[in-house]
Length: 151
Ligand code: ZN
Image (tube, rainbow, N blue to C red; front, top):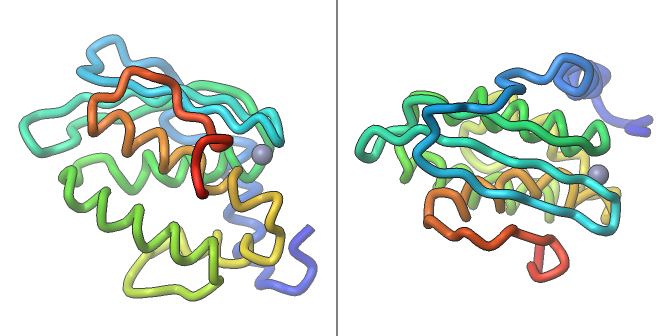
């Protein structure tokens, strides 16, 4: 689908889609949040284990399209060992990136989602796991739906 962006980016997304990292439940989770993207049918649940401000462990389960799975997989890879504020900051950067295609600052591998802005229907897929992690950090128990978000 990403015919005109870097093949490497596509490879990273396919790799994380086929073999999602941290794809399991987390029995010791201290918080969790569910995300649902009705437009595409993506559904996921994130589990976080917080140690003060630090995310000591994070995982997810769910089903959905390749973009949503790869996004959640890369999110868990990024967030493990980071602080709440690191994740909040990265949420802003990823959000801006999927909306505008502009990569701001050092987003590492998450730059693979910059191309998503060209496919508006896919933006919600890419940002779903980020809305879910923000909800988990805020301790919201209500499932997150992209229907209620401005994306
Ligand atoms: Zn999707």
